[in-house]
Image: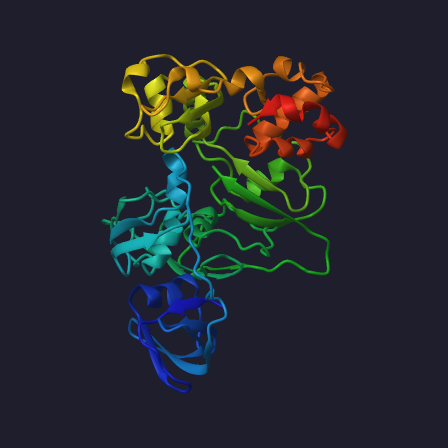
Length: 438
């Protein structure tokens, strides 16, 4: 069931009034009727099943049937982290707003998260008035954040009234200009429903005043496949088709390609498969993808390697850093110098090389007393393939496995952890334990 959020808590058998944007969503977008049920959630952690009992002007009255503790609220505290997509992909996450003015029943500002087409925005605004001039409006276009739509009124032109029934997204009475065709009517109604039988519909047929157009439901006793078509067609949606239908036939059912369609990769003669989704790209999307690919190609690839730093820094350890860093960069990565660091022994502009092992001398120690572990033992966290092969029992295969393990799992936290590498058991570990360090 559809869910709505209310500000106040209430009890069973009480009445609840829904108005404003929630009413518009319930009545005009979801097209719910008296007797339909929804879930109401309050701010105290309760869910209530409620039934629609009446519609007043811009308000819906519901009766609460049941009330129970919400089962969807987590008892544990949860933190969510979100990555930020680049460019237009960010539009799929951030709340957006658009304003619609003119010849619609409920002009105003509307908020949305998901992709929204112009036809759906118009339905959110209660639909067109009988004087709306929609001839220059692209109903299948996507709405963008901060867009302002103005629906003009017809000037000095005759209109006809058409009653559209059956399997379309928004059935109802539509006022149209003389000379309108069925394809224009179906576009105004948001396109066909998935179970619409479009096989006998002539989309090019001219409409006359007081026509009744009915879109029948498919015969479930017959065998159908279901294919969804999106993008640059006039009537995107899900279509029920007979097995063996080819792409050209689906394109015709969907009203044909728009002028923005990129059909360079289309094979119009191929047979369609049940459940497939066909996206007709636009020329603008292709240009945008090419720009993104060019930008990604121009991004320089930075190599990285492990560097070990010990001594008078706040966070000594092994760090995966990019090439071209100076001694200052490495020190900053390790939390900076402690107060005991001997600054006279540090060349801050020195470029650090791959697999370097750095020791920051403190004023409490002498240079001659610093143990040079890197010369006595091999650091398995920064050693290369060739250096690892110098160990007893380690050939090129095991050396490469050590490198792969290190890249996948990070540096070893102890020399014993090298036995987690496939092929290195206690016997090999006993041979190399006195020659390695981390």
